Image (cartoon, rainbow, N blue to C red; front, side, top):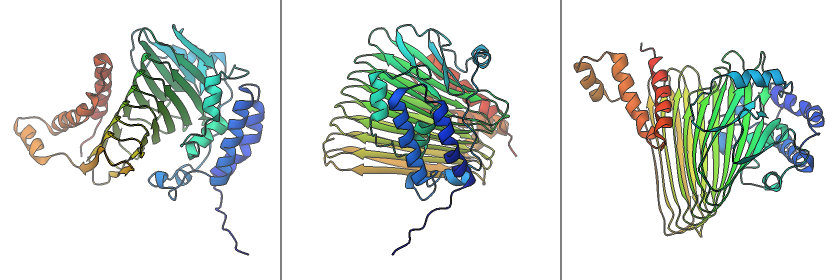
Length: 440
């Protein structure tokens, strides 16, 4: 009889598994059978697989089993005072006329009325609307992902948002973490965008630099035919935090989705995107800038699946990695046999600012159709010596010269943000990060 080796559970894995029964019992009052089933499915996947580790290909460069030394308890001590304190804080991005949906330690707070939107609070709904129940029941390609399984098991709040057609909408999904000791949060947001609807969505994450909190957010979008969505994500999570975030998308015929991400926060961050394009002539543009220093570990992982013909996708990411930080970019474009005439291009470019900085690039193409135009590329290097010499010879001090070149490098990706006011606010954040650099 063959013996099968069982992996030794880490203290964090044991703590997560042990905390689930009592947590699920306390949370059983909301969500109904759909949420209960999602919890059981999620914890079953976790018990079978444990935390993601380097032996899983998509987690090879971000070994969560080794990096997560202690699992913080799920946050449950929500109060009105905590909500008021969070709501009183200044927003990280100024958005005129935006509906602000505030999430405090995972819980949804109706901070500003969402005019023209239908919003259901997951923590108060005894049962879920059909779109939410379908999202939980759907066995997506990413359902087995380790972070997604944990989110479904320990979801402690969130919302379902329906965006109707009509006047363009502006929505701010504002996630804030507040507390005096370590905790974990697992918000789940489902956004249903109706046919021909137009919306700008800004997602922001922030929290105290003094607390080693842990977040694991899941946001799922469904774009109906001819919907147009511009999406901007800003990660300014606390300096000691672990920030895991998953964005899952389904895109229908003639829909357009543009995403830009600016990532500067968290000790360990991973933003993973799973995009399923099942409609003809859809258009997808994904871009981002990651700025990492100290001992930060910043991971962007994405999978774009083209299932229908005559679709277009672009992925353009730039990293600036300083000191002993590590960057990760994993991108995969998958073209199904029926997705003829697909036009896809992926590029990742990195500037390393020290000998200790590291970057892991892994672009991939999986093409099963014969009439496509697809390509990918990745570069990694330092600042150009000739450009630096030119700047120095014009009298610019080293700090200013390097900042100008780095701002220009990040600026090419920032140009993909269509809203000028939003683009300039993001540029200011890049400049503020560069201004803090200490050149040895």
